[in-house]
Amino acid sequence: MKAEPARPAFYALRPGGWRDYWTLLHPPYTAWHLANVAMGAAAAPLFDWRNLSAALLAFFLGVGVCAHALDELNGRPLRTPIPAPVLWTLAIASLAAAVGLGVLGAAVVSWWLLAFVAFGAFIVMAYNLELFGGAFHSDLWFALSWGGFPALTGYFAQAGVIRPEAVLVAGGCAALAAAQRHLSTPVRLLRRRAREVTGRVTLEDDEVIPLDEATLRAVPEGALRFLTAAVVLLAAGLVSLRLLEAT
Image (cartoon, rainbow, N blue to C red; front, top):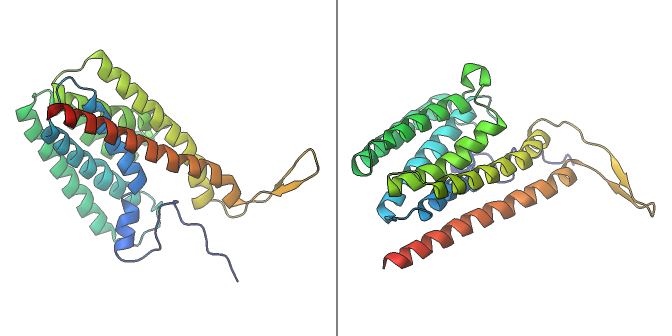
């Protein structure tokens, strides 16, 4: 019996119906990006759960929905059958809603928040549609945009200013995002482009370990699962601490 081809991501569900939209959200990575927002907010000297809730919703719409819908339009990396008009509708509507939340937040926190809103809207389009010849579609811009920027925005949405601790937390989140990128890039290559993988490892005692596609992606995918859980749990713990301090 012919083996089932590898799904395009370890979190991808069997194609069809609502499962396509779940896969489209890239749930582990969306949760990771939202955790970056939360960690930035938790580092701020002032903490308001309403500001954090609005920031999380805006990033869920901007990254979880819009960015991933645009990414799927650009080459169908997840191989979903979601019609292009539906993807465009999701992308435009979610980006408009995210920008609207950002404008409302600027009226409450600081009008300088509009600079974050403008950059967020720009990088979502430039990165995922590979505009300007793909100049913004790189490992560096991924780390800065999906790791550092959410944390910096989360902090600013609380404090209305940027202080050294905000830059340090954002730098840490950017480094974690870079690690995510370095682990996920070879996995995507194996799952989405590899037609055949053959090889073996011969140990000193002459034991032979066969190599195949599943073997090569087992370690990086395992690391990605643990890193996602670690970042989300860390963010949840820090936010819980700030909420307890406020009561």
